[in-house]
Length: 130
Figure 1 (cartoon, rainbow, N blue to C red):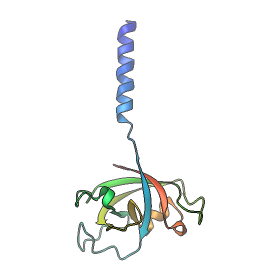
Figure 2 (figure 1 turned 90 degrees about the vertical axis):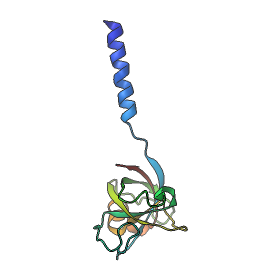
Figure 3 (figure 1 turned 90 degrees about the horizontal axis):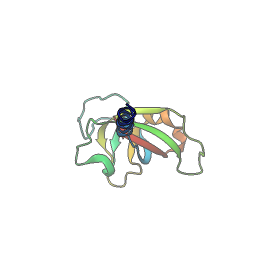
Figure 4 (figure 1 turned 180 degrees about the vertical axis):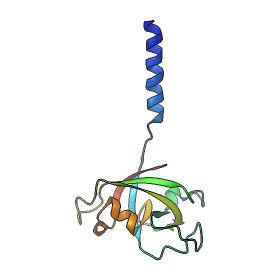
């Protein structure tokens, strides 16, 4: 009986551990309208909860239409030492942020404002595909 409970408890713990998703770390910047044309969809309007992927996640267009949950984790400079709002946002990748891009994910201005003060310009983030 005890042995069976122990096996069940270990299996449950393994299942919980396997379901925990490790978030990636990076930085976020933002870009402003107009948001078309985009690298993924041309002149299709994808709304404003969108982002452009840097080379770190672009994968030669493989990132198109992926959705990421993005959360601000802190400042990247002293301009705004506490830029985070404490909220997260889910964005869809619709564009490419070319070499020289200053962030891992370049959020739309509207998406960036949900997670951080736009005056910060660039923030540290954690993000994971959803």
